[in-house]
Length: 211
Image (cartoon, rainbow, N blue to C red; front, side, top):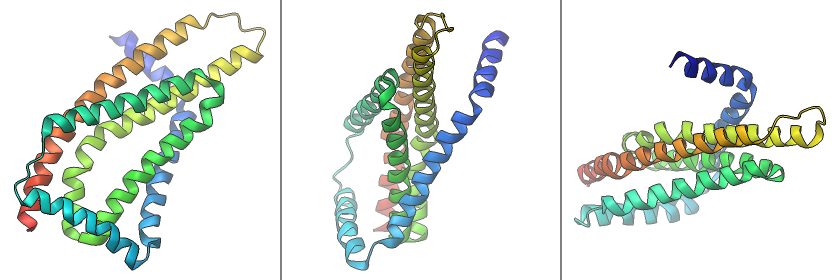
């Protein structure tokens, strides 16, 4: 147990700059997502809010959310996203795409929260806190870790391609890479459970209290 903790601490310490870079990249996406909301004109906001209100209306009119369907859709989305990051880590040329994917994920979250709060004020803040925050508290670290590991493995491959002195086999790093991504996929299932059965139930209750 102590040995595993030491390995983890050493890993984070050795790759702290990469973890910091990926975190800043993600946060930059969130900030720009919020900026996009503020740069939209009145007509654009109203057009988008129309679809949001229609969704709220369906919930109020007792068209209850199918939590099992949401669980499946959410988990399969996370699987596809994480597998894409995994594959991109295996191809050195895919490294810039990893950055773009992580940035876009932050952008979407920033835009979603920013738009809801912009249109609904304090109600929107409560709605975002209950419907967006819970699963993202889990999924954001998962994506940042996945993106960081993808970048680290790409850099490891680059090092082995251009360094003649490095005779260490790639099998051990690849095995660790695969195991950790498997654990991240399992962790994303927990996030999908939270989204399906906690966030959506809370959102449903809150929206009905609004209307």
